Length: 170
Image (cartoon, rainbow, N blue to C red; front, side, top):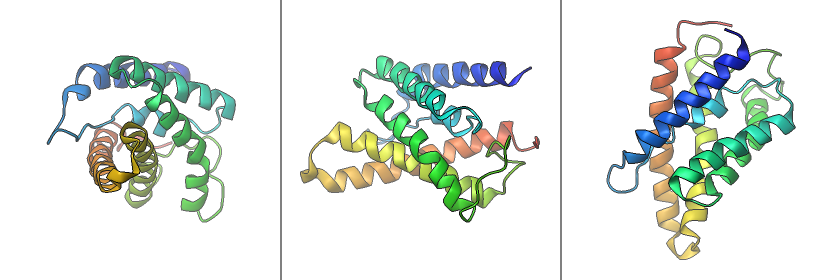
């Protein structure tokens, strides 16, 4: 399969899983994993930035439509994709990632993947929680919910990555 069909099927499967399975997983009333972020995390870096932003917006918009969150997920996805090159730059010691490399298991080590995934999910979850709460009076709820959702989502995304991508290299 070519890269487009692989990415499209990944997008389709993860959106379906998010909408029909993981949107109904709510532990303790607020832990809701966002597995669709794996699509954006594994998005090839050589795609032009404008296309990455459009893809992130469409992904967030589709999830917004099913969650009825009115643009919150779309904003958070675009912010995550915007910050992704800077996070990669910092993780690589201010050196850009080689062309054609997708940050996934088998290509990068576990610590790199963990930090990369954690930071991207943190950006997305923190922005979603701030926009959903929209009151600084509840700053403790914002921090608590963001932190736990980030840990929970990161754990699930890493499990999916290592089940499906661990044996594959470049």
